[in-house]
Amino acid sequence: MGVRGAGRLWWGTVSCTLFLAVNGLYSASDDVIELTPTNFNKEVIQSESLWLVEFYAPWCGHCQRLTPEWKKAATALKGVVKVGAVDADKHQSLGGQYGVRGFPTIKIFGANKNKAEDYQGGRTSDAIVDAALSALRSLVKGRLSGKSGGYSSGKQGRESGGGDKKDVIELTDDSFDKNVINSDDVWMVEFYAPWCGHCKNLEPEWAAAATEVKEQTKGKVKLAAVDATVNQMLASRYGIRGFPTIKIFQKGEDPVDYDGGRTRSDIIARALDLFSDNAPPPELLEIISEDVLKSTCDAHQLCIISVLPHILDTGASGRNSYLDVMLKMAEKYKKKMWGWLWTEAGAQSDLESSLGIGGFGYPAMAAVNARKMKFALLKGSFSEQGINEFLRELFVGRGSTAPVGGGAFPKIHSVEPWDGKDGELPVEDDIDLSDVDLDDLGKDEL
Image 1 (cartoon, rainbow, N blue to C red):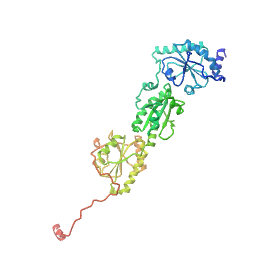
Image 2: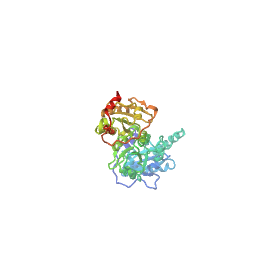
Image 3: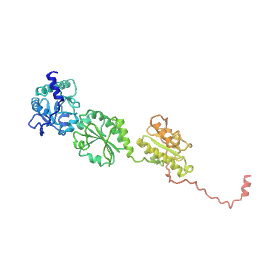
Image 4: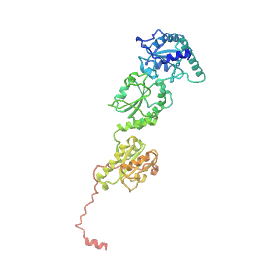
């Protein structure tokens, strides 16, 4: 192994020796720019300049020996390349973000601030300057060929990519507690760093999921984002060590980590699970007016309409048993957020006809898509098992559908809501036969 190779190995592998602790290796009078978690994003990540950054520990002997060479290089490169230093012993979170495992670690932040390069050269000022100018040459040539020479981040960076992020709520140290901790809603919060590649990959998925989750849960589950490089109080409070980190916040409970997939569908599925766990049981409404039918079916992807036997055929106990089955199924499928309706046989005969039910086979059930004006009929039994199979098959696209008769809902009659009691036969008028001559009736018939 040559002398140069041996020197490089010594710098890269030998552990730092413990020296007397010092407050720092650089001062304001140096041309080395002291970097901290507070200014790193603004100074380095959002900069158009090329940066060389040393991550050091004040007690590290190798770092102490590098200090005069690093200062000389910073002075020589002043106005050409930015030279900075991070006390990674003091600011361990910042060192951790860049995978710093030993001291000193030097990284080059060039055209793509997202992908800092490790500096593997010598530790003399000449070697450092040569490496800086070589990296600068590559950056300039890249710009000449049309490649981007800079990188923007923070909120601006989050909004510069593709997709509409209007439904992702940006949170800060100042706004977090008011919006999240004191809320009755469920929050899924992404802690990100603008320079983080994984965060950038997640960004369009998070944005698309936010819009769909907002619509499907009526805003009861919210997706938010925190720039952890700016809002460091929050990052420290919740122990954020890597990016992106997603946490779930529910009122009265400790936050938990989201460890699911990072695709739009994965995020939506988890959000809907959270919603269904916290949502009240869906309402089961009797169709007593046109407004009940239209408002329910227009507001949901599907409305499940049951036509139950006449009250005289089942009594209150029989009807309640059917309603209990519907309520159990509504609870089971509540994350789908369907509307659930019922009517008595004969009360809405036009509606029955439009759904192919029409006068027999009660109880019956139809799943209606009011936007497409199509429906599917329950073919199996009106039971938990039968309805579950019907809805499951329908959900995966295996059920057969037909257009609603007439292409629109028919006229709905206003009726009195069921009072929860057994039905009564209509009372007939009493007939007084005292003045009727039965013999005369017999003669007339003859």
